[in-house]
Image (cartoon, rainbow, N blue to C red; front, side):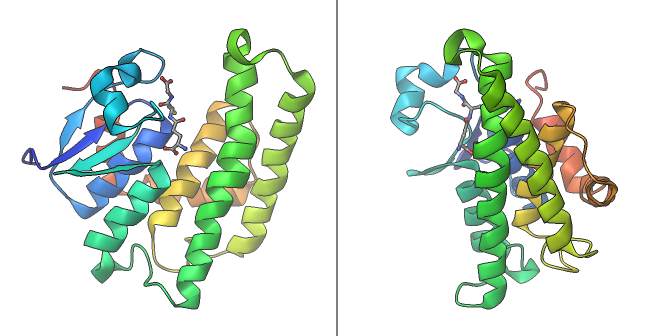
Length: 214
Ligand SMILES: N[C@@H](CCC(=O)N[C@@H](CS)C(=O)NCC(=O)O)C(=O)O
């Protein structure tokens, strides 16, 4: 992939940065990679804070256009460069509404309400406090929502049916996060993950999302 100074992706090393690397890999878009990591102070520099006042990764830069929030980056790239492949269905269609439902489900029910809570109270209690009840509720909540995902998938290979889309990137990265946390997932989701993570673009992105890779 040739470096293109007009497109820069900031951030490596987390499931949230993986989402952006993965969509760029699906689209085979050239980009420059700034391998800053979380909890390293690198998201707090004046240069980066100007790009993302939230001081979080990932952030995508295309010329003077800056976009943050991993799901927004996935959807922007898919809509702008992946229309022919239906990586994000066109607006004003029920398929798009269904796509949005999966994106918000992944970001809210799987990421914010559960994985984030676990991260805060399991890994960072010195910052967020010990909260065993909240932790257990988040773990139980993930298991419940994972079952809901199986019901909604209804045996389909991908969230929109036969076609892989950006929503699969969001769902896959959340499920991988749960596995890292030793949350037991239903067999159907392991089958789903075997499909999505076998993609060539996933494998390439996995490598580029590693902090140590040049
Ligand atoms: N909702 C944001 C969350 C991004 C986020 O929380 N990023 C973490 C790493 S996973 C981060 O940059 N934390 C700041 C730090 O640790 O310095 C997204 O999905 O992009």
